[in-house]
Amino acid sequence: MGLALACTAHDRTWQGDTYVTTEAHTESTEATAPTGINLTDVAAVKVKALIEQEGRDDLRLRIAVQPGGCSGMRYQLFFDERSLDGDVVTDFNGVEVVVDRMSSPYLAGATIDFADRIDAQGFTIDNPNAQNSCACGDSFH
Image (cartoon, rainbow, N blue to C red):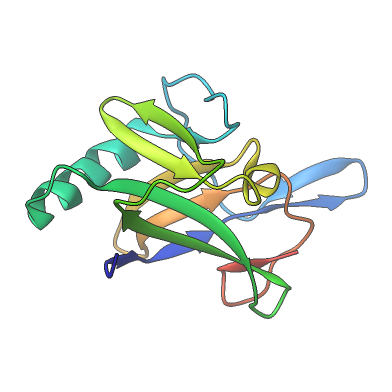
């Protein structure tokens, strides 16, 4: 599918005896999904609105991890109508989130949110699995 979604990573890094989060994230009333991914209520509403703008009812939000970026791995968020072998599909208030089997371990425990502030707008990923991230904000290791 051609529509890609911009995202910013807000990863936790280990410093001494504590995790330090680069930016606060929004808590959701949703329980963590079987995939280990959590989509906040705000993000689910935004995804639903974007899919409605596309005028299609067969699209789902696909989240993947691919090699690349300055830290070794890069997130990809995009709308997709495909079903791939091994996909894990989770429903969040009518929004289906799809993760391929290779990306699933990297995304376990990650929270996808949507920020709409004067200083930032777009999807964010808070991933406790990321050991560090680069200055561009969308690459991690």
